[in-house]
Length: 84
Image (cartoon, rainbow, N blue to C red; front, side, top):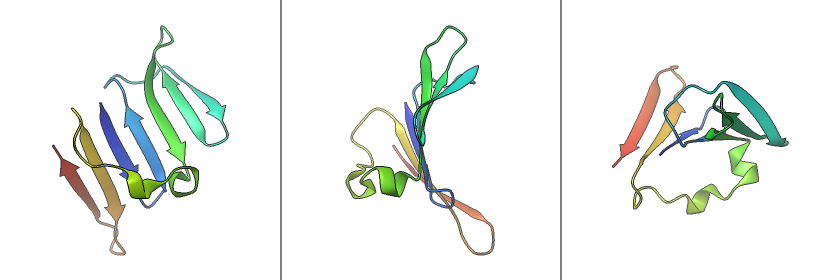
């Protein structure tokens, strides 16, 4: 399981399985479930994450996955922070 927060889009993505989704379903406004062909949830996207969640309590580390904070600076380059 991996988590990525895209600051420039204010989007939080939880990858449950590394497979490409076959379809997406908006479960609630701004909450999108990515589904496999057989209906399994392979990812969850939370749009406007800073408004929909409390990112201050997003714990980085302490679980068996990776967190990426992806931030585009003003020059357009992207910086990632990877945690074990």
